[in-house]
Length: 281
Image 1 (cartoon, rainbow, N blue to C red):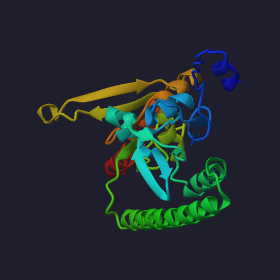
Image 2: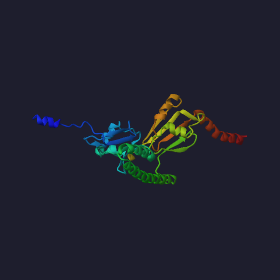
Image 3: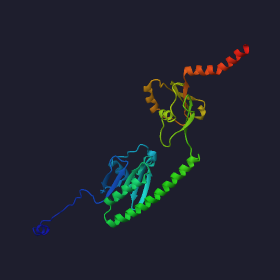
């Protein structure tokens, strides 16, 4: 056709337009709304854009979540809290063959299975897949060993009392005067504390007089105390107990029943009265 146009003294001109590139892809999975494969286009693909394309992060507790990026045999990790606090991390460029996995549980086995599956998709040759899987397995093994070492160290420190814990204290007419250790990285409610320790006995404890005493963290207000009152005599109010979040050093106090006060007063006074009566005879 070109020669025919030239022989007829027609100067041909052509233009070539590339509609899209699909030869290279980036895989995104884990704690995102929708795991996906994203093709690399002429425009650069950033980490933030890739996560948005996958529907964004789906994490309940960012403190324990991480964004892991597997690239050419190396595993990179960015804590989600750091990712959100440093906007420039969203601009990190991704390249074809990258696999991004959002991990919320430190479960390296699940991450490995994700990367293993995606390597089959984003690698072109079987030899490249084999080498990538071997390198990935080595990297995951190293990371798993380091993570297990940290877990064992933490467990040992906790058993020896070397890890700082926050507590809530129970007093008054509870089943057992005790302290409740607040869970790491999670919130505990008033209901959690009450029922974890067996609740309280309605025959001696007054369900209408449950208090949470909370001091001030301000050194200038060391004696300032706020008392929250819960009337659990109305069962519907127990819903409030499931919503009320406890803070370190809170004190839960349950008042005694009025009849219990009288009974204990008589129990203490009766021997004295009896001895006085005997002495008078």
